[in-house]
Length: 254
Image 1 (cartoon, one colour):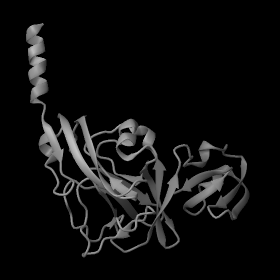
Image 2: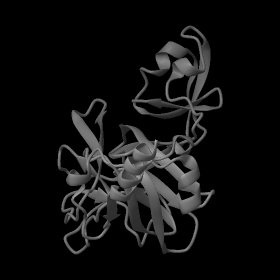
Image 3: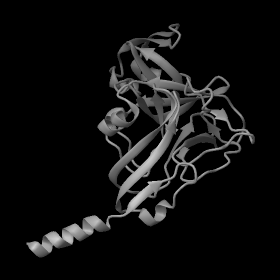
Image 4: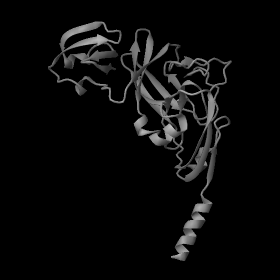
């Protein structure tokens, strides 16, 4: 019994400490798969930020760090919207932050540095989410950054203009992306306007979630204009890719 306690004590004392540098980056590879005492100081701005971490955080930990009124959303798809590419994000704060997953985070306080300190299992996988923009042959990838990159040709949220989750193309004069931030990349490499659409946690993203296939429904766009009247629910998914309102619920047609 005493020997077992001694081994446990030595193991606890030997637990590695990981100081996650969000400016210079950190060699996460050597900590991969290890439970570490993690400390990170992350600068956040009032409004929308991006975040990707090499460890999990629970909803409680997210609220304790960034405030209970913060918002956390994950990319769930992309679609063509006129000449623009629409990025669809859905509230996922109840699930917390999953290691190596890129998110957008809305912070309501003043610009400041937040300290994250916890015991966590560290993962070195490259965080990324990729979706096809239906009918265009293009893909959209949202990815986290583990070390500083210049970001030329990529899209990010500017700290000076982040009241909306607006991703703009990074110019050579900016500072690029630092560790734990995220960028969006278009496979075509062409310059486009990216717009964000936000879904609540309970919003259906498919017509099947709220209507039977043969049910007749009216379809509206997000401006409240009726775009289809008394069509079968099964036909909604054949409309042009966009966000529609059906039976009072947002529906994504990809």
